[in-house]
Length: 181
Image 1 (cartoon, rainbow, N blue to C red):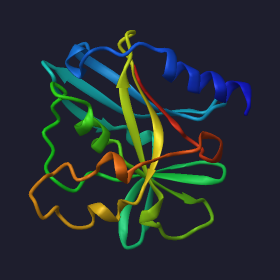
Image 2 (image 1 turned 90 degrees about the horizontal axis):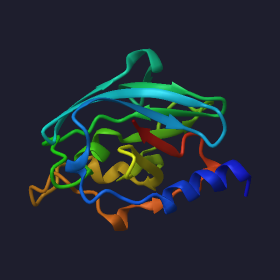
Image 3 (image 1 turned 30 degrees about the horizontal axis):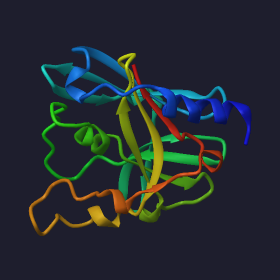
């Protein structure tokens, strides 16, 4: 394992976690995706006020792709392309309980840069934690996004569960780290 990767992973394990997402400071925050080297991409900005938030994906970071008969905003990397997947169901955008709504707003799919279409098996889910320095950090987890292809039958608009996620191997992905500051 390379040293920068080890340092990045240790930062997640040694940072104390704030007791709740409601402890986040009101205001505008930048959302970055990072690799373990020097590539850092601004992908969104969120405005937080009293536990509620709005999110704006930053268009200048993305290129437009038409994949599998749908338009996507994507980040083009050297070997992989990261495409934002807007969550298709109602979302409260409420941070007073937890960070799940924000995790759902930051879903991505990856594809090899040479591929034409997308594969829903290549879903990217960043599990987020709030650290004591006021930042939110997340590590990539892989998931099959086919579970989002139809509305949940039970009406639960949070259909992704821990057993649907597999911790990703940071070395094998281009942007395994998400930081909100």
